Length: 439
Ligand SMILES: Cc1ncc(COP(=O)(O)O)c(C=O)c1O
Image (cartoon, rainbow, N blue to C red; front, side):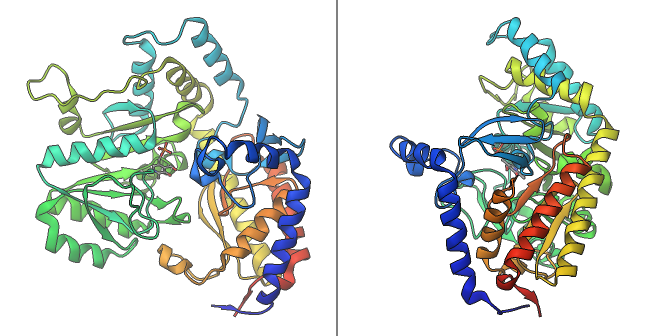
């Protein structure tokens, strides 16, 4: 529990920070005024919006960004994990240029899609067969549809606070935009609750869909015993276990599943696997995925004009082959673990009720010290605290998500970690009086 000290002033301090932001960013504000004329709320990707208007970025290099008003930022957001390679990885740029030189939209099979599939299958033991899509959302849509057809069952068990895409969103209840599957909602990290649901509904469950760590839901890791328990429950009732590793695949070479020694029936991927371009993939058990073999009499059709688009295939392949070695990934996640530890030590030393949760190179800042096992544990946090720190970090040249999300990229090294820690330490020093204190 956080003591409600000084919170009366928090609103005023935040309002001043917003005023300074507005004054510093006239070009972004101008572009926002123009954007609202053609895009609802000036926006075509909801997560990027924040009051009073979001920054317009003009260019990026390595782990740095420059906005429309000429400010340079350390990019600690890393495109919500999709920017793992940074903004200008030479091998990826070269591969894109080489693919461009051979022409776009070839209307047929290409060698690169086989090579990229082979690279992924070689890392993910549970994915001997896979198919590409254009986004993580689409990968999850296909995985669920496949699970329903495969099992001839109707229901899908998902978790409170989970995010599997814009039409598969379960933060703060189910989104009205969700696809109309028969979802059964369970609390995250609560195996007893899932056990009770499976006892009741198991015979109707086509799939259990789970993020090994809630990503958008606040970087709350799934407890290993919870995820192992889901494996057993799914096998027991004949549902397919679908791991959404759109974010967590970057925690180790074979994803979070390799770290935990769990073999899901299906896995979905996205984000950085396209080398920074649009990407999604789903795959898994050969007997299940084989339904997409067009030569079968009972074949399922899986379409998508851009599933094998040459730029994504080329960029994704170059990234996996030339850049993202298991050692590079290990180093990136070790830097993330070290950064998270430093930040949590800083918060303890400064006696502020903040914490950074997550795994490896993916993390979220929270305005509470409560132990986090599900999004319900975040209920007591005052959202204005994160907002204030977001603006404070921007003033100090560090860019993270408004909701406190941070994802490191490969070029983000120890010097950049120092920059982030120093900026946050200075923000705490200046704003300490209005920050929550541990009870
Ligand atoms: C765990 C998870 N699944 C699925 C998605 C959807 O991926 P996309 O934005 O590529 O559709 C996301 C995106 O943030 C995600 O974090």
